[in-house]
Amino acid sequence: MTAGLVLAAGSGERFGGPKQLAPLDGRPLLEHVLAAMAAAPLDRVVVVLGARAREVLDAVALHGAEPVVCDGWEEGMAASLRAGVDSLRDAEAIVVALGDQPRLAPEALARVVRARGDGALALRATYGGVPGHPVLIERPLFGRLRALRGDQGARALLDAVEVRDVPCDGLGRPDDVDTPAQLARLG
Image (cartoon, rainbow, N blue to C red; front, side, top):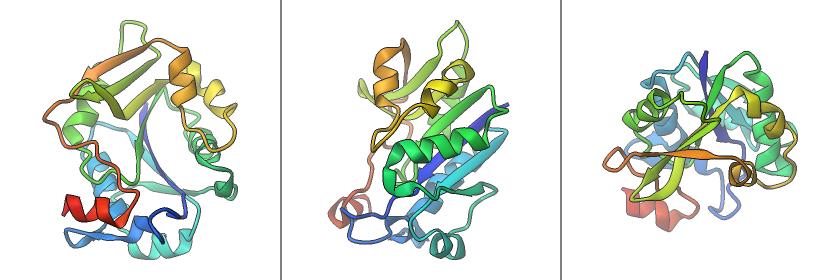
């Protein structure tokens, strides 16, 4: 099983509030990523929530994604990754996306999934040669994901293993939204 994992547990401190709910093109920001994941060749999708989870669940269409609430979300992204990996322990590979990247394209997700094989334990989309999301992580690395702590994502893990880059130029945009100004530029 190839599963999708959307990380969306943060409080949106730099944004000034719950950016998961910020409107973009008539829908909450998080819904854009969930719709892309639903259109991708994934067997199951989990979205990890934390800050204001109830509010997000009440306002965002999940497009079939299963919500997982990370009680330790304040620890940082590592806690969200652990919660997601734990909920997907039966997966052979997990495709990680961020809930604040509304222009993620299903075609980029599909390209990364299709690139599996040849023994690579991790793959990541690149845009103009710059690494981005989605990132696909194979089962042998799940234990190392569970060992992460603090406000770090999988970057340290990816720096320590061989990662195959998958060019996704022209397939969506990798922009993430951390501030209202960044959101305005996407509109």
